[in-house]
Amino acid sequence: MAPRLVCLGNMTFDDVVLPDGTERPGCLGGDALYAALGARLLMPEVELVAPVGTDFPAEVLARIEATGLSTKGMPPRPRPTLHNRVAYDADGGRTWTIYDDEPAFDDLSPTFADIPAAFRSAEAFLILAMTLSAQIRLVDDFRRHTGALVALDTQEDYIVGNEAAMRALIAGTDVFLPSAVEVRQLLGHEDWDIALPTLAALGPRIVVAKRGGDGCTVYEAASGRMTHVAALPATVVDTTGAGDSFCGAFIAELLESGDAVAAAHAGVAAASFTVEDYGLDRLWLAIPAHFVQRRRS
Image (tube, rainbow, N blue to C red; front, top):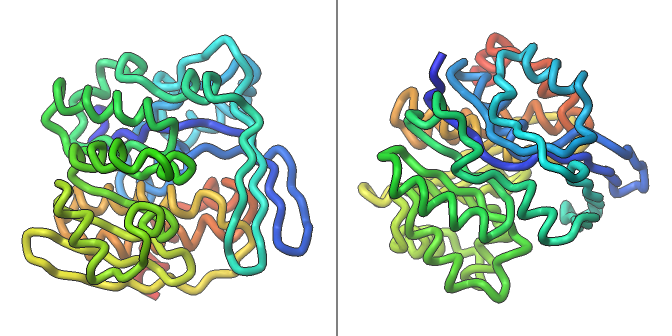
């Protein structure tokens, strides 16, 4: 089955530290997998592209394939898989420690050449957080080689000091999905009535500010409509990957219905599953029927 949506990002192992000091080392993570699993709650025609290291477990590849995802877009690189530490504070903030250096991070970020030929006719490509140089290359390649919708979720660590490059990157996209932190880094404030139209003026037709427990705010440039969508109630254990699963479900619903507000509701529903356990543990178990039920709640 040819995919309608391809999610591009990384695969990682994450050491998660909660505000109370509880630590869960070695959680399987990776924005591409969070996004793809979130998207597949709405439609099956989703694939991912995410290079892996030589140490990536064969049993995890088998579990990914058991969900219906192909691993053809997970080429091996001659180095270990990315390893991160993410520590959350009581106010909802987080501190990422990336144990790998910049060349390793860039090498384990996907390129256009990594995309299997069967995936290249997709209707949409979702570029998730990775090195800035990798994101720039992908946006350029998609604009030159495809007519697909291009959606972008930036990597917050690259914004400060690279604001001009980031604005040029955003200009090449159709949908921009920053976090509240990234909006503040780009513009210096979180006045959504000003910030989102300002970002849309760079080029995207839809801008979505992901606001964690406060849900999200969606701006549609063509109509000027600004809509806030609240987060769904959930028993929060670990918020790692919630934004990625939001992005995947958002783009999947946008492809299905063309409705950005419906897409936002899909995104918060997918994220509500992700936060209920460590890493991918809850999202692995979510099925479309559960997703439909939660959207109706």
